[in-house]
Length: 211
Image (cartoon, rainbow, N blue to C red; front, side, top):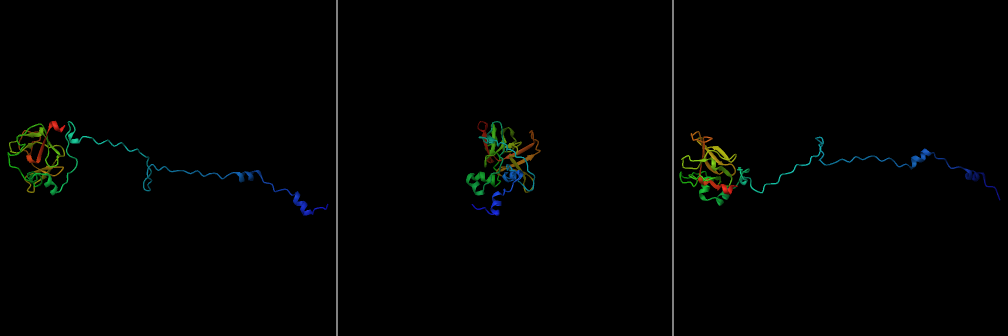
């Protein structure tokens, strides 16, 4: 058998390069994970104002099943305006009601349904049904029209006539003409006022039906 060349013998006996322990660890260890912070979006982010803690919305109370004006022992004025065109008012009012409520007319004294009427109950607007007066505020003034010394809170609007001689009173909800208010006439009432109201502008609701 022949002898292998020196280059072959060197290749056979050559040792593989050594690897240090630390280098091997670095090779086998996976790279560390970078922590990711997730924002909470319970409230919308704003660039113009600092973030505020989330607040749970408060409960909304349920709507009453009975209209407020019909609650026992409570009388309230309507909370919103009633808007109708003149054509719509003509369709739902009688000619005499339209003449007084919408055209600001006046009924003849002593002819009204409620002039000498003193039953217990509530007087509503004949146009829109808004409560205007309690029967306990009605008194006999002898003027020929129903007289009240005060209306329900927020139910009556007052507007000076163009000539400035009298103060017109109207329904705050629909603007229907009621009559005029006078003060300082010497009537023995808590307010010394007289709301002189057309009967046809009113609708009486007995106390037994207003509760």
